[in-house]
Image (cartoon, rainbow over all chains, first blue to last red):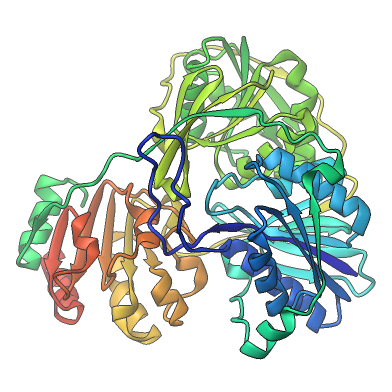
Length: 251
Length: 310
């Protein structure tokens, strides 16, 4: 079975996001970029499935600026076998990304698409579900456990839902989006980082796919949320409890 | 203009988030219908009919709908959308699961986690875990929206809508429900808890993390959270993680213990109503956003706090 893992290059989760003064967006200039953390979990899971002999090949795909190949190299260093970069000079909406990924799925015919439940930039939590819909295939979102049947025709996926866990069974091919509890991604070792440089990375452009990627949304403005002000310092537990009771009324 | 709101319920009770989604739907300025998709959920439909401003309640029942299988929910909703200009669902795990599937089937964008409905095509939503807010205008003919219900006030009651039973879609061909386990914790769930007690790397070990935080959480009826640093150090499981790469919470009270306040952590809890920070480092960034800061070592502070709480 082949597993396709879409990965996104996003602002590193440790970087403070700055809104541009002209409200046109978020400042990406000279900002550290990394793989979307949820996608790292997806790559890790795919590589583990390969290590267990469930998957034969792990293919990472990214859509974005040419520098997204760094993100793909990270996936390759973690254990993906090859990578596909689809370059785009515009920021694509989830629906457009899902359409492009559908085209990749049509070509690659993976048994499973494993991907992060959301990217930490747009926070849409949409592409996996949209891709499943466009493929007319089942979806298993927010996965905390993925078990593929011995004959590789089905997967049992435990999902993190409000208030607990739900386990569903989906026929493969299916789209699985991953949540935090699934695994702890590995750090790529130096030898693996070196090896990753020699793994195949195929570059295409959005135009190669003939897919309608026109935006549906116009961003009117991007603003900073209201800032929180520092409050007061307390000196004792008694003072804190009294204030929480009487002043804030929260206990 | 007509708007469909997907009810949030557990087949026996209607959750208040439904009423909040109705409040968001009211901003569209049209008729509002509620869809109750479930099983043996007539009581839920009756409760939904009482929400103020609702025209009618559609009740569709099948096991797959009750199990929130996205394929079934999407089949049902897509089939209804000829009669609606927008569909709204609370941004619950079920709503987030189904809404993008519905949007793709309709070939429209998803508007997720909407905080504000400016008009029927203009919405404010958080990006970067709420570190920025984007105002977007949709050019799609139909809108598919998940609503951050904490941003809306309940619509109130006093309605007397009719309840209409509609056919349920066929069971999904390629996905099946296996089991469900409600976390049997005495503690509330992190994402929806009114009080969260959260620990950071300063706690030093898994044993310390649990022995310090659990009694306090039990005393306050709180959920337990953790910083990413504490999770990475192995003191707490990954699903305790509060922050941009974890859960985003907005409790009434958030108590951060031994958490310095990395940006990505702040992104996950800055919308709490009241933030308390306990940290021995007076320069910790967490104090810049805390309503009540207490510069103290947790080792002495937490026992004192337990005593003061009585």
